[in-house]
Image 1 (spheres, rainbow, N blue to C red):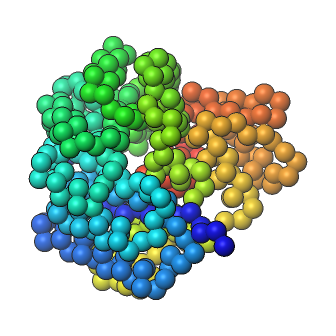
Image 2 (image 1 turned 30 degrees about the vertical axis):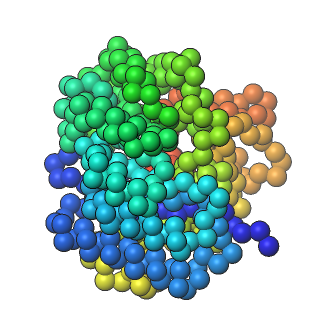
Length: 375
């Protein structure tokens, strides 16, 4: 029997205090609390392996995500990745990716991560304009980003992704163009472009038409420079590039480990507790740490598939077999110009790519139920 393709998401939701970080929950904590968290993560993974929860499954990708996982002890991260490599049923070429802040990249960290053979680094860049980094309150500056790329090249990392942000407060199109040009001078293998998040829950710092203009410029510029668009937000120089996110959009199951991690298994979606103390105390009892359990019905599965296709820039065709809630969902997208409908064929619009940034969580799980609050 063919093994079920599964993704493993390792949630490390720690951040530097008083610095820009995205993710829920966010922990700050002491050196001791970080060590306790990583030890608990390994214990949870050991339980999963001992209880044969992965029987009949093949791990297609492993991602260490969250707020800023690279601020954790580098030796422990490398050891944890090595433990997984030795004990999981990994697919051939299974990518191990790590979300990293630029100032954490250097000889000590890369040497330690090399023990676990992390082969994809997702570098949070956001901007290459000094004033924008200050406005975003990032914990790093342009020099940190440049040094990080030099170190990654020195250590021969052949899959480096940089994430850029458009629509930052006060950002002009000329600033965005400069950031894109400066980014490509660093020669990243992959580039992700995302709109600036909501400010105080009241809307974007830039208006809709400006965001669309920024997005479409990035599209044309990156493709002109030899990057192929892989999803609505990611561009790659490699035809065969496979990341955790693209595999999630292809429909693989997701097993989340750690506080706040989300899973999609056996037709259910659920989330681990976001409480640090509750996770540490009850990681060994699956029934005590999961919450927000949701069983998918036919319409949910159809909508999930549509969301995945749209994010992968694929068109889909309206058919008579679609459930009524699915048709209502597509009609809502069409009415709000998030998709374009030509006959029965539906495709994502630039507006859809810009105004739909929270459709996918960092874990790659569709969040289509949020659409009613976005529209």
